[in-house]
Amino acid sequence: MSLEKGRLSSRQLIVLALFVFVGDMALIYPLTMVADSHQDAWIAGLISLPLGLAGILIPLKVHYFYPQMNLIEKINKILGKWVGTAVCLFYLFFFLIATSIYIREIEDFMCTQIFEKTPGAVFRFMTLFLVIYGLRLGLETLARAAEIFLPLFILFFASLMILLLPQIQLENLFPIMHTPLPKLLHSVLFGISYPFGEMIVFLMVHPYVKKSKHTNRDIFLILIIGAAVLNLILFLSITVLGAYLPEHQFYAAYILAQKINIGNFLQRIEALMAIVWVITTFFKTALYFYAFTLGSAQLFNLKSFRSLIFPVGFLVFGLSQLVSKDIVFYMKKIPSTWVDWDFTVSFVIPLLLIIVYYVRKSKIRTSSG
Image 1 (cartoon, rainbow, N blue to C red):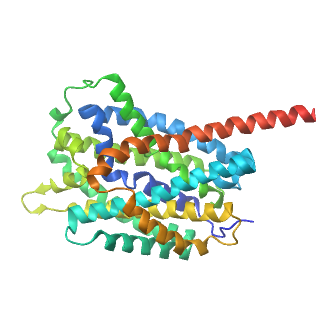
Image 2: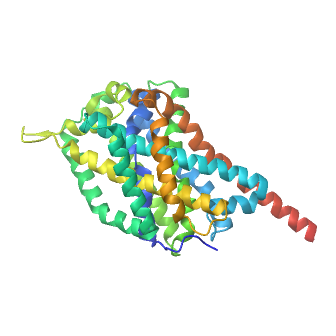
Image 3: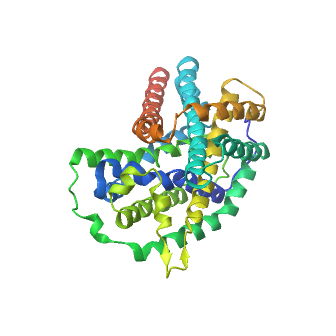
């Protein structure tokens, strides 16, 4: 019996996919890419696009094994009770920590860039309150809210990009291909694992989408658009700010928006970038929160996942404080290790699930034959 009664349209799915894909990456993507490949980061971003799209086929293949089941149900079905439970707990832990990190990212950004004297707990509470309220209303309501915010996202982002065009200095891209190949490939791994890998959360949502023959096409199209958005931010960060500042500044994209100055009249509109980032990160946080609560309820055979929303909210409130000592620790430690976790849960384990599925299927055919 499904614990989720709401149903999403294909349009709602792709809007959520765009917000999750861009999400927190809108601000921190330049840092993660420039760290190793410097001014060649835009090349790594372009290489990661087709590879990331190819990688998405792996979890998508897992989805088609049992399209009526979400990720937790599929794992138990394929791996069996004991091994399946262990892998499910691993995924639930990933969803929980990811939720806590996204909450902490919003807190750190607001406290260091906008409201410097406001206690971080205020922003943690406000964000969690909205997430909990949204999930109590249901997944479908959350998706409808995302549709409302989509035009705002497009308007603000397009305005920022257009207004930054006069600031571009193409000489910041040189020398081209100066980065050693191993470091360039490491940046490519970041470009694949971070934005593309974190789409694994949609295996918890996909079964509750109304069927459409164009759904997969639309998903790939929105991933291409999302990747274009992130790589455009990366390109502008390098060409406007140079390679050094994005490498050492966590919120390079926010500083990028501060550079807008049209005739000494239209300036200091970085709040638009902040709004875009908070909107996308909020919906990403909400979906990961949803994945953890729904998956936990299914794993432990609860009648409803909504009874877990408030307790999990308290848990996330505390964990978001514990995941990182401060923003400096976050910058130096979390991105370099998180990429491995993303790659594992998004590509390695799904690939193993595919192998186990076909091995078990072949054994059943052999025994029946």
